[in-house]
Length: 382
Ligand code: ATP
Ligand code: MG
Image (cartoon, rainbow, N blue to C red; front, side, top):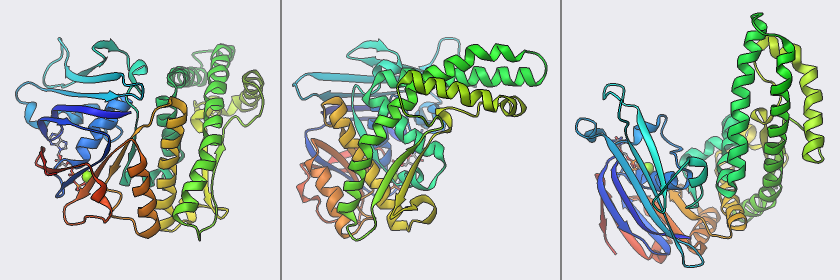
């Protein structure tokens, strides 16, 4: 799919911006702090229904609007392969009873004008964001790698997001119960119901992640080898907390046994110690953990490989090409790596690429449109 129209009102440093887009490669060029990343963040937000960059959701509301009428609107229209169009609109505004001092924004999503819950709107527009923060997937904590899988799977399958959200609610409730048991306010048999739910939903989440990693592993290894042919082989392997092969029922039964083993310790710590919230994704080059031992270049290549594999995964899962969003990633790359990423960007149905003024990487002559970004304003150059 490709975006045909994008509109931002009071989003970050954009007061009011509108853009008509076509397939192919579009370049956004500008000095630092002008709004290049903000623009791609807005597109990623349309795809995921939330920002992956903002610490708090309200951070995206343009500061200058806070004194007047605080609200944000992002909307985008994309054309699908069958020629049909989909419009996603995100509104954030103060709810009726909210005081301005607290600034709690209510978010409303619409798909084709119809109000939707986040779970129904995610992935209506499909996108993959490449950014400098991606290095955290490799060098950060397991939570970063789980988020990588969650973001990808949520866009690919709404059933996954439903299972994941259900699972997360179970963990919250179960941890509260463990605390009450520790304090003598509840009894251990009360855990049985939550154990069942943890295992049922946990087995679903585990199964989805296992299948995803099975598809991502060869794709990311291929991308890595193309970018760094002289390096060792890149491997992505799923390390599930509930490590058991078999049907969802068998995995679930295995999890029940694990929980029984850890029950005492769980009560002591008031924490659920078994389940996909403890999963990891092991990433290695030539048999060595990249996050721990990889060079800067290897870490960067590994991160790019995972994003390229994500795009391929979504293409297969959705039967649609995701929009590629490359936030300032080309200029840091050299030789084969840049060539490979650039080729992927040119081959994709649509790529939106940001570059810092003066750091223009070669190879962007294939751009179908170029914009200058300056202080939250977009100017078409060619
Ligand atoms: P760089 O080349 O350094 O990556 P950039 O063009 O990508 O720069 P952005 O990250 O898009 O820059 O935007 C940076 C500017 O947006 C910052 O100056 C920041 O202060 C501003 N900004 C961030 N959030 C808001 C907000 N809610 N309201 C107004 N301005 C904001
Ligand atoms: Mg930026």
